[in-house]
Image (cartoon, rainbow, N blue to C red; front, side):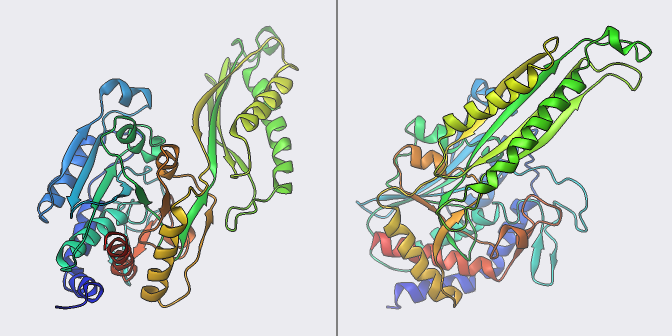
Amino acid sequence: MANPADAIGAFLREKAATQIEFLAQVVRIPSDNPPGDCTPAALRAAMLIEALGLAVERHEVPQDRVRAVGMVSATNLIVRQRFGDGITVALNAHGDVVPPGTGWTQDPYGAAVVDGWMYGRGAAVSKSDFATYVFALLALKACGASLHGTVELHLTYDEESGGEIGPGWLLEQGISKPDLAIGAGFSYGVVNAHNGCLHLEVEVTGRSAHAAKPFTGIDALEAANHVLTALYESRKGLTARVSAIAGIGSPQMTVGLIEGGINTNVVPDRVVFRLDRRMIPEENPGQVEDTLRAVIATAAAAFPAATVKVRRILLAEPLTPLPGAARLAELLCAHASQVMGETITAGGVPLYTDARHYAAHGVPIVLYGAGPHSIEEANAHRADERLFLADLPKATEVVARTLLSLLS
């Protein structure tokens, strides 16, 4: 009988074209979030997975929970493969994607392959790991090893909205109770820590007036500008603090959305903007929010006639390693170093992911999956998002070998 690890590699080489075509079909399914009408995409993905011989559970999220996170529909998929008594390892990737935006040279839903790269929204983040995890499980089933435990695929559709009704809901409802988890990542690094994120919405309300007599109104934009200036001034101090975890860097703040006004000749009566505050693992999320609210309140006090309201949109806790995660990271690093042909280490990234939901439920988790060395190479969340296809079977083999080590 062939060595199981060798059998995994042989299986993946044989199925390489099938895996690429599976990924292409998933990329071609629109699943933009917003607007977040993702159930049709999930049901289509389930059919593609079932065509490969795996049973798929469909867990539709109740509409009140869906609306609460600003989405239209969401259905989570679970594949459970039991090999015998033992631990349960979950593999989580998300199928919702940010809207394409502008600047593409390829069809965002075309899955075109150019010079060995597949282009398309979600090709890297993280539909690639639908293909990684599905084919890692198929390879594990085919390798002939005597295994003990269960592998679950958690394919969810709300990461871009915060993961509350994806992994958060599956774990909260007890639909899954894994012992360990691997989350979508990139193939040239194992991630054991990441930033947290706070999203705040600031609404400034004044009173409209004719532009010929602006003094008869209350200029919401003028007040909002004062608040924004204070926020940007406070941002300068963030660079003074650097995380002790390699790869994390400093806290960051970005104002990513702003809208308001009625017309060019009208004093604006309302301005709304949203800010994104990335928190390093050493920061206390509650203190970060209190500090931002204090900056906003102090600046708003200069315009007492205007009303300023602050609403929390999202609070994502930073990810720090739990007991048990080190062993998982060590296995992934060892197998990745061998398969990739270079030394692979574990570290942090300045992102936030669904991994925090597993950690919040006491499930040790690290991130690993298909992709290049960095999110910049992948054009993640940018035009011409792409995946170097030669990395796909390599990352898949790393995951399958790691599962083999865990369940043997």
